[in-house]
Image (cartoon, rainbow over all chains, first blue to last red; front, side, top):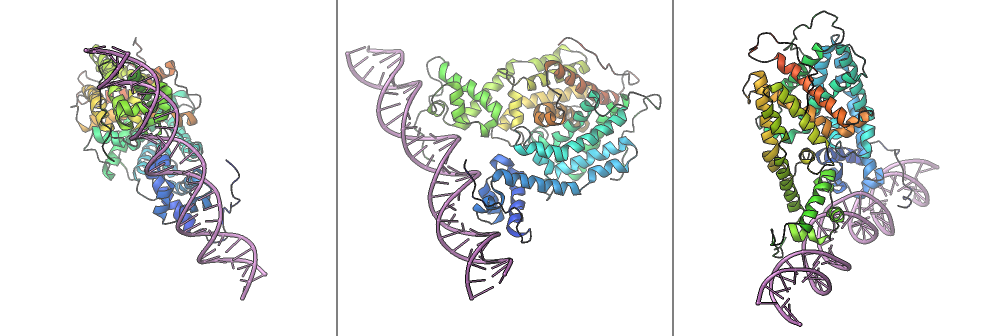
Length: 238
Length: 238
DNA sequence: ACCAGTTTTAAACCCGTGTTTAAGTTTTGT
DNA sequence: ACAAAACTTAAACACGGGTTTAAAACTGGT
């Protein structure tokens, strides 16, 4: 409401260690578990074993702490280039797509890992966007979306921003996100379905098969003549 | 904490009209827009043009009001048998599936309509389940899930509880829910994409085409010999 | 007209939230 | 060694949430 007490020492001279990062880690954990709204700064501070006032001292307010956590997570995510590699290493766009889906699902699933839940993060806010949402999307989801689109465009022999390309892209994203987002619902409907490592792989391959069935039969220029039967269970090392 | 002032007149002798239903309608609206947590009793009462204390007088507390709203919505949903009709009226399971997807997307999209957002309701809770979730799923989502599964099982010539059947079912549900759930995300990635009535239809048909491509080429018994080319843009009256 | 029961009202209550204060303690530069 | 800056602490503050109260207004029956 009124002016904040002029304490804006963003980056102190000391090592960027101790309290600030303790808070970041704790916040990361709590935010990802509870979501922005339900996460309380008291719990974060308890988790970090730190005084309540310190989050305001170091970050200003809850929203800025959240943004900082997001940046932190994004940074960590940028280092795991799994998804990019999938595209670069595979000449065949179909293989790249399959790989991309696998990596995506892997990332979405490993919630407990230290840097695994970036995207889960994103989606948790998706039904009621936070101010951070647009930034998150800009910095992580949009490039991935573009990559996916150009890949699918390749397969379809269509431009990346063609409507059909986009529809297909969202069809695939929808399937992938479903398993990450609606887990509780799936749990009720399909109790035996635990997302173990193997099953994740099965699910990913299913999504790839399911989607390629359409993509391969709807390419615009059937360059290699007739729509050949699909390489359904084309397994390969990750 | 301690005993509630013994006012439990669930159904008064007077017509079940006025205040109680005003509250139900308002609560339905607000809950569906904001979700359980962020919806405030004060806003609901303001919306219903009614005193704050009345929700506690008529329903006990917020949770019971919520449950009552859920029951109300389920009841309303049961009356609109759009989805069931889609199955009964179409001999061809593919047509039934397309119709089902259309109806599903329609239901999910028309948030403003009086009884449109039952399912939106459900999904909003899916990332952070409320106590009501299990009941909702049992009473509405599960039968729909079963219907979808048996339909897909028919197309695939597989039992309804075969793993592949389930995977395909979730693939389709994933796509459909994606457009309802992750709307904000889609909005960022694809700003031109407004879900108008026509575009909803396009999306629904795309999902149907996209999914049938796989289903029709992976039936177990290719009863009618070769996998015939798909009836891609098979429009028909709703 | 009166009364008992039901419904409504305005005002509070209690609690948890994010935030701030004012005073302490530690660290740092000189 | 000493002062200034950085950091930490315990305690409050302000606000909004759900809930409750006690009294007023409204019924319907006799």
